[in-house]
Image (spheres, rainbow, N blue to C red):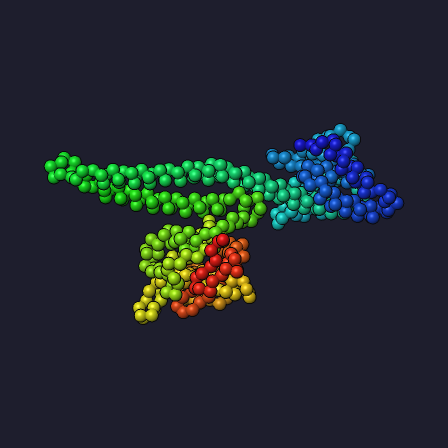
Length: 451
């Protein structure tokens, strides 16, 4: 598509304005100026269409050399895209150049064609820049450099175009997900609530029935009904919990704000760590832990009845502990315990740190400990890096992304994620600041409640 006449006039006027006062420069200086103007204007006129116009206007305006730009079409043929020549367009047959070895222009009747080759190890022909005159060796050397710059700028702008298209697609996809997935989830939550109430109502109805008589024809089904209802209630609650966790993860990961800001967009609010964040994840992973023969329990020095309050993004911080529990399932090893017998053990807990972030800056350290061998020293500094896999776990399936995600989310909460080892347990520590320093208690596991 050709740019508008107004756009071409604007580019020409821009070049003429920048050239004012340079008429007395020698040819070498003018060519240098032309190349500089080409680079400068390519950033001011950002579109690929404007770049194509610019590449023929610079030779015409700056060096008084009419030029035509031919570009490869979808079928591989070269088609005229831009020209400043007053001559009528004519059909020109170009010999196929060898892009990697092309160091000279192609001489044709009344013009010199310079191949435009894409950048890369195996470049292909993108097009031809035709200068409507016989070039001197100095001019030809300049245009070879000029065309190399043109090819690089085309590649940069094509990447920018592709990136914008991808970002636009992702942005629209997220809006579609919000409209077609997340919003309907609200309806599912209502359905689960209605189902729970109906099962409770059905249970009361069954409990209110008259006692079963031995002579009643429906005595067997009457005896089975209470158990069937309880089983349905248990299954409904299990499905509802799993659905709520899946919805929480989906909604927090596909949050519109993440894509608008280009980073995770936290939505912190006061929440109970034990009951709202950790225990729902423990409920999810407990069958997997049990299947691996792993015992999980709260650390002995933690007050079981205490539920500390944090200011956190529930969805994202829940996924932090989901990642740590997932690692516990995969990497917990049998190690000799206090009794001397080998066991697979996971401990979790929390501890108040009055000076976690410096004097007068308390925090809460949340931790998960798993039995296993110590992570090798060379790997420790890289544990939380993107895509890093510990050398000792190469045979275990994983992506190396989990701990990187943990570190990102914790640091967005102004906290820190760390690793330590005290035989026979590996410990992953998550330290988060308390919401209100003035109210912090020094009791183990305490954190200020929101005012």
